[in-house]
Structure formats: C-alpha cells, structure tokens
Amino acid sequence: MRSVEVAAPVANVKSALTAGGVQDTVRVFDTKVPTAAAAAEALGCDVAAITNSLIFDVDGAPLLILASGAAKVDTALVAAQLGTGKIRRATATFVLHHTGQEVGGVAPIGHPEKIRTLLDNSLRAHKLLWAGAGDHNSMFSITYEDLQRITDAEELTVR
Image 1 (spheres, one colour):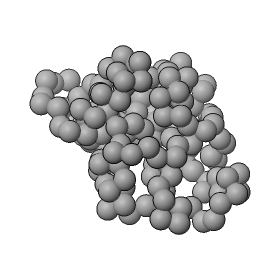
Image 2 (cartoon, rainbow, N blue to C red; image 1 turned 90 degrees about the vertical axis):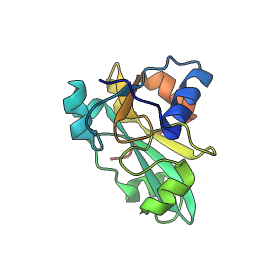
Image 3 (cartoon, rainbow, N blue to C red; image 1 turned 30 degrees about the horizontal axis):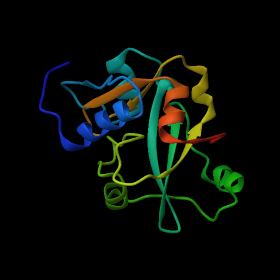
C-alpha cells in the first residue's frame, strides 16, 4: 500500500463512509484491482467477500446492484422480483454520469445523487466485505449490516 493524493471519487467515498458513521477503511494499492479476482488476490480474501458495485440501466434510471464477486447477477430474476421491465448493463458513459466513477472502480457510495440500490443477500455470509472505493486502485472494508445501512439497500436474491 502506498500513500497517494486522494482523487475526488475516493475522497467522496471517504466522506460518505464517515458521514454514515463508518470508519474510513480505504486502502490504496500500488496496482490496479479492477476485478473481484484481482481485489481478492491483493487483499488475501475469498472472492465471494468482494462486493461488486454494478450499475444497470432500467428505462434510463440507474440501478446499483451490490453483488458478491463470486456471483453473476441474473437480471431476469431481479426484474421479476422488482416487477420492472428489462434490466440492461449500463454503458461506461452512463455509469460515469450517474456515479462520478469509472467502470471497474465504482463504489457503493459517494455518488452525486442517491441511486436505488439492491444488496445481494449472499454477502451476509461474510463477516467482512470489501468494496471498490471509487477508482481502480482503492478498496474499503465494511460489514454487511453497515453496508446495507449506509446505502439504504434493499436485500434481494440476485442469482
């Protein structure tokens, strides 16, 4: 881990953590950790404890699904549970516009505006979760309960 100047997206995540009453646990790595596998390797944890922040497009509105790094989101299942139309993977431009963060570094928090958020209930099995902190080199740790509380996420089966 190295000490670097914190970029705006990471600073926004740090602010959101502390505003939510959670300790700032952001770690910055020398190498990029843009995938769950890369993050798990850098952190020495199970890939299932990595929380992927996935942005989807639902009729032009963003939907954030916080899913285990070991899971593939079943968008048809999620759509059926929500009673909504088709859920499509968002474009990189759509993600950046709604989160202020680039694909591969999206955090569950620190966005310009609140995004409807779903939380993969399989993540509950882990004492400690790790999530992206707003860029490709940063992650933070958090409990399932704190993540649900600070994101105001709806628990859901996503796979």
